[in-house]
Amino acid sequence: MQDRFIKQISLLPADLANELVPLLNQQFSGHLDAQQVATLLQKTGLTKAELMFQLLNIAKALALAPISHFYVGAIAEGNSGDIYMGANIELPGRALCHSVHAEQHAISHAWLSGESGIRDIWINATPCGHCRQFMNELVDGGKINIHLPDTKAQTLQHYLPNGFGPKDLGILQPLMQKQQHELYCEDHNDPLIIEALDHASLSYSPYSHNHSAVVLEMADGRTYSGRYAENAAFNPSMMPMQMAIASLVRHNQSFADIKRALLVESSVGELSLIDVSSDALLSVSAVPLEHIVAEPV
Ligand SMILES: [Zn+2]
Image (tube, rainbow, N blue to C red; front, side, top):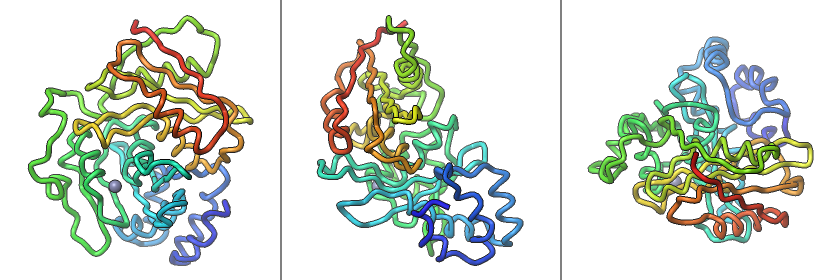
């Protein structure tokens, strides 16, 4: 079991802890498939709500909180029934605007894993205004059920009445709906560029058209990606570098092992993420940010 879970697992009921220990192996990065969740429910006799609130103890252990020392866990259930954990990520020594909130982390985890929507989300602290706005960008966002400890589950619409969202700006294909913005780059042979182009083509940037993605390559060859996820209210947008860094942390990797960092963005975007991406990267690695501007196909 990974060290970061040792204290948290001691907080769980013994039968749940016994079932979870084999799952929290070195590869565990906060994903349980629908069958694993069903097995945990069956073996422990817990209700779904009881299980999820217990599992938030594990999700919290995925946090990186050197500034707040406040650990938030979130679990998003995708349309497939799989669950995706996330936690708050604060970049050491960098502006607070670089932070990733637990809800953003869990939802981006589901999105990167191919989910097309979120049905329910469990959180151990009430969602801030930023996260309510971020979730309002999702497919059927208003219908997402928000579960908090000791509180009756309510929809996002309850927590964000009269919300401003993508429809108000004429966007009818919201976040997590399949995006396809093919991009082209002359250097076809670099696998890192190919991976970044794939993610950029799936990114969500209906406001700036800056279809973009970041890929971080580690010394062992593993890669962690992030896609740009814009928001109708602009500021709650999630940057691709932050999404990639959150993924790296979730996979229990060390920043010292980052070997390459690449940002790919579309030539037709109305802005560039190079400066904000470089600044975020600098907080965790001295590796220079490679930058590719790709053309739409
Ligand atoms: Zn938040």
